[in-house]
Length: 103
Image (cartoon, rainbow, N blue to C red; front, side, top):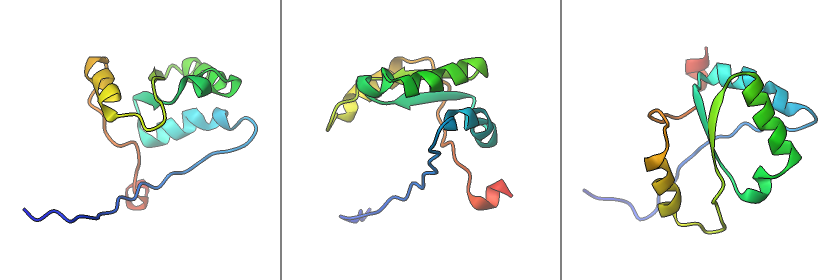
């Protein structure tokens, strides 16, 4: 097998910004068909009022989730992979749809 030295990966991201943007979570999750969310962040972000609003919105809409907050700069993937092995998550799948699938 010939593996190239350089490759690219495109992961388009739609970002919602603004006052009360967290209120769109239910709509977004329904569109994606997500059943369970897994957040990867650091302890600083998880401690903010903004993040508290996200969790509150998820709970109010009965959306299950787990949060991984042991992230640090240049974190080896070994730590979060260890967490993923021990968490009670269903098999993860990409939570995005192509433009063709959305039609």
